[in-house]
Image (tube, rainbow, N blue to C red; front, side, top):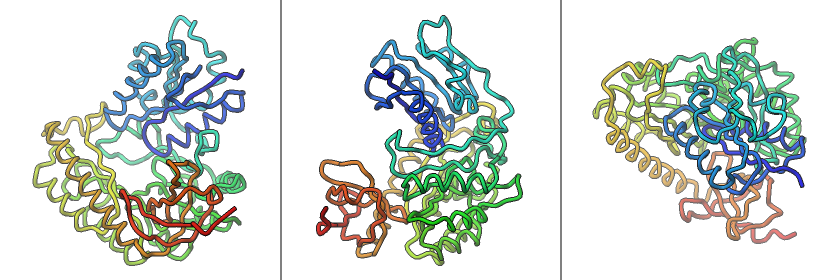
Amino acid sequence: MSSKVAFHTLGCKLNFAETSTIGNQFVEKGFEVVDFKVSSDVYVINTCTVTENADRECRQIVRRVLRTNPNAYIIVTGCYAQLRPEEITKIEGVDAVLGSSEKFNIFSIIPEFSKDSPSCVQVTPTEKLEEFNFAYSSNALGRTRAFFKIQDGCDYKCTYCTIPLARGKSRSTDIKKTISEFKSLIDKGYKEIILTGVNVGDYGKHIGETLYNLLLKMLKVDGDYRIRISSIEPNLLTDEIIELAASNSKMANHFHSPLQSGSSKMLEDMKRRYNAVNYKDLILKLNKRIPDVGIGVDVIVGFPGETEEDFIETYNFIKELPVSYLHVFTYSERPNTPAINLGNSVPIPERKRRNNMLRILSEKKRNEYYNKMIEKNVTVLFENENHDGLMQGWTSNYVRVQQDYNKILINKLIKTKISGIENSICLTSFADIKE
């Protein structure tokens, strides 16, 4: 009987792509990938360190694993492991700690997954992170859309962020290799390729290329698919990319672009590369150029020095913007970041209150957007999960759609019309399609 391995991923879509690549290595070695909730021989936890909660969650997950199987071999890797390996080594039950680069070489580092080893395997993480490793999600981990890593690292100096410390400088590889990997995903049958990275818009910066040029070449690849950019900095979402999305149906008419604050004063303290006026102009341009465009926004609440007036300015700024949904993050102090020394800390209960206010606003924004989509023609990519007789999928502009389960629709780009909304999900129907 083959050994079993289970994976748990914290954080961003990039981490999911990398977890899947690690998963492929285990599959090639004869392991069976199982759900993280069931008993397994090996557990791999791919961590994030954007917030304090991610660190705490890692510790909780390890304890949960040991309750399920006290004899399991536990590997912790990723950004948290890169930045604070000694801290993870002290967590009872952890058998190996691998940094951001080392996680792609698990089998050469750990020849045998045995808890008989007298001490935790801790490989000193590579400090100079220069290597680029392709990664993408795969069927080994049960996903139907492919999260394709095209970029890693970040050259920005945002005062709250540990990612440049954990991931290194911005880097990517040449277009020829990237297109080759992209073609392989299309050949495997993926209908949606989601481009991921730490700073995707920075693709090609150090090799004389641009994300726009990469997209142009990707769109020349034959096949029935669409391309979605997972997230892109507002200062890197160029007019060329906007025009490409407006004119080519293979580009998803959806952008996720971090705002972080609607206060230009806060943006300056965060060392962001734009102000509130720049961001508003971008959102209005997107809405004018791309019909029914979906727009997601990242926001941080409780940054040091954020007064009630600053927060209300952010709240009202977003309230008036034609965006679809928010991802709201509560600021947490991270070691070795400039923000931790700014002073004027916002009390934790106040941070939580502001977070809740913006989450409620996000639901209002999403409901307004979904209601506008009723009776609109859309293209849906249906996923394979059966939700009690129902199946779900995503439109090009990132609207969640649901209908009666019909396996013939799985992993197909289906043109349909949205008929209504139920439980915050848009509805459609293909009752006339039969096998």
